[in-house]
Length: 129
Length: 386
Image (cartoon, rainbow over all chains, first blue to last red; front, side, top):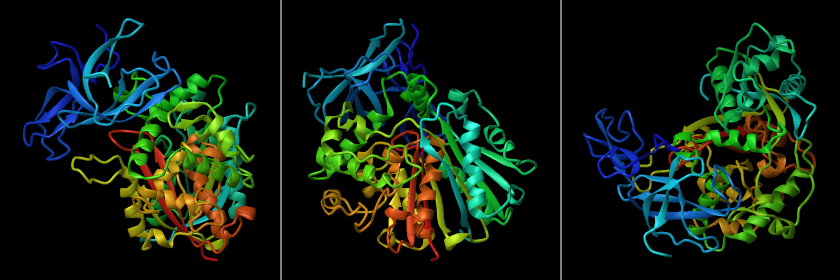
């Protein structure tokens, strides 16, 4: 299965706890970061373990977008999310148009098939907002 | 700047806008020659050149040696050309390198040229090029456009600033269009009404079409020298911050890191500024930058707007050029054009938009996105010697 962002998220079986976002955990200080990193930004340690993060997250601010791009048909939502492990990033949010999304909304990671056959991801509310 | 004083000895530009019959080379050459003429020097007197551009590889088919191709046609040869790419902060970054080169004593006089040609007959291709200014592994293929990044950042500000919303965003858009009316470099020189702004199409809530900086062709150039030019405009500080790792609550964002270092290096504080040019890729972001650059304190944005403090005639005029929103945003030229505006103001050459008695000016140029901040935040503080 081809991924839209091979270095950003993990499919089931690719790491313990997957699917979710790809992260790194420092063996020295425990700092967790998004993506596979070569050195820890906190302690400089070089022993980092690839780990799956962001299975759950909370929504920060978000914006409803009214211009289609990348196969995302407007209107759609983009949000700043904080993963339960700490790292923050932007992500597509699966939510109906026209209803503002509350900060702090609990989210879960979900794989998202694209029309071109690749698989992407988005976050969806744990409960209907 | 410690070793040698650094002066902006000349400025030049090609107007910003849509110029289908003009090549990137021609845009850059026009600006470069105008800057040399303004400084009163010949091309032979330039010791090195720093050339800023972001997308010529993707949009114009010139991935490498961009600056060499621009400057060959003005008789420049033999001296070094350094090509600089740092997304929308390419221009400010080139100026920073030029300042270091002069301050070090390596060169007496250098040329900075920023140029971009974004109208290529396919808006989708241009927007796709702009999207390359983020970490594409993270921000590609997820439906993210820079307008959405800005919308989310603006919403973060709205959550912390009472009474800052659509009315303030419409005001700042109208203000900057008013400022641009007398700026010959500007892409949009017609005033707007708040009603026009409010009626324009929503792009990424709360950002509307007329709040966005437009695709643009254009070029801007500076002569930077140990020797002063007209108005004796001096670079008091030149700072770049990359996106910091924000691992602890309260860690400062990149623009604030850059601004704090620039104030410290210049030996002045934000209350001593007479004007500022800030990176309003969307006009509401200007309000956010007031806080990030410490032009006002937390909770004071609404008061800045209510007092019209940042309009011409106000306490601290911001984006007297019209800003990116009205002057236009040919990416590689933007950071250079900001310093042209400050230089003209500090020389007393800004015409109807002159800030009376301007002595200190700040420019903030922002580029790309990585982590939780712009990939590059560049801050310059200039002092006029009138």
